[in-house]
Structure formats: structure tokens, C-alpha cells
Image (tube, rainbow, N blue to C red; front, side, top):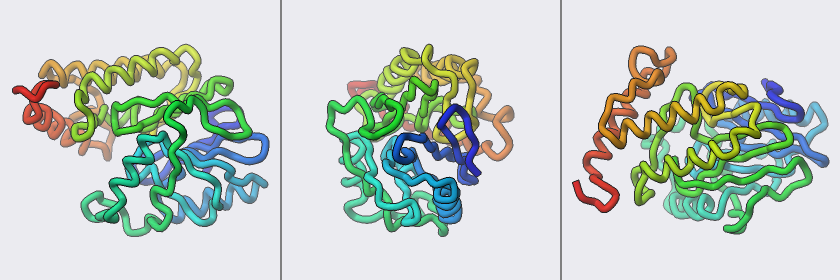
Length: 270
């Protein structure tokens, strides 16, 4: 079910990891960001849009992870975009197919249209479409070519896989030269637009109001600082204080600590 979070902006929350699909209404149709996960949810979303007389005219994937690259034939054949680096990463990763078991992809996820995105020009600052201006804020924090989207006139920040109330920062420990600094740099970018944001929509987790924007930025920054400094993060998303059903995030934290220790410093030294 679609829930309105601002004028002309609606969100559908999936049962899969509280994944959020975002619908932005425009003049001739809607922009659909990170369409969804389960096949029946994608079909329901397509039906809801059709029943309300709206068609998808543009799609966008915030980053090159499988759960943000899905589509369904019922959503139509609108152009689907990502950043140039995102599209290049997707092409490389999917060149030999995708191992559904390795990535834990549920059986009912439609993969036929997975990752069929076109990269925007490398200097593109906005999504091309007939609707409210959507600014592309590219960074390399969570994945190569990750983008947050700012819809300033609606007061919306679509954060991709950042600023979640249930997920800790998950660093790109395989693609980034300096994943710690890359994440902190991305948080500085988001901090720079926070004054324009009334509603934040993370890729996974609860939608937050204006009072949550800098709170979540600060929480993510504190976690990354703790990883950098080898400290206990004391993060409410990890351990006994985690939201029920999200206890597994503690394992993500432990793996990040171990991988950073194995990786060594930014120059590769221990």
C-alpha cells in the first residue's frame, strides 16, 4: 500500500528488510525510485498506479545492489536510470549472471528485468523528467555510484542505503580506496542539504521527519568514527537495543570490524 509522506510523494514499504520504493508525481506520470522487491508487491504497486490513472515515466536506482535494481513488466517500459558509475558497476557485476543463493534473493523476486538501467551523463546533476526537480547527490559511501536524491520543493531526501533507523552504515569495503573517508564525505554532502529536508526516506527502515535528519546523520557519523578508532560504537541499532527482527545487524557490525582490521589503513598497511 502506498503511503503519502509529502505532497506528491508516496512510499511503499516492502516486507523484505523494510525496503522503501518511492513514487514522485509529475506532470505526465510518476518517477519510481528503487521499485521494490517481491513480485506480488511490484504487481500491486503497478495496479495501484494504474487504478489512479498514473503511469511510470521514469525509473531510478539509487545504487548497484540487487534489491534496488528490480522491475516488473506491469510497470511498463519507462527509461530507468542510475549514475554513470552505478550503471557501469551493474553491467560488470551482471555480466556472468547473478548467484541468487549467495545474495539470499527470495524465490518470488522477478529477475528478468534486473539491472536494466542507463547511466546518466557523468556530470548530470538532476534526473531528466517532467516533474519536480530531483537533484542527484552522488557519493561512494555504501556502493560505487550511490546517489541520494533531493526533491527540495517537496522537502524530501531519498537517502538510498544510508540514514536508516534499523541499519548501521554498511561500508563499501571492496570497491572504495578509503571506505571510512568515503562514508564521512558522503555524510558531509547530506549534512549540507539537511536544512532543505522535512522528510527523509531511507532505503530500508522507517521514514523520518525533519527532527530525524541531522539526528540520523550524527548517528551514522558516530558509528563510522567508532569503526575508524576501534571503539565500541554504542549504537542503538546493534545488540540488545536493536529493533526486533534486526538482531542480525550485530553480525554485520562484527564483519565490518574484522574486514577493516584485515584491510589495514588507507595505504594498505596494518
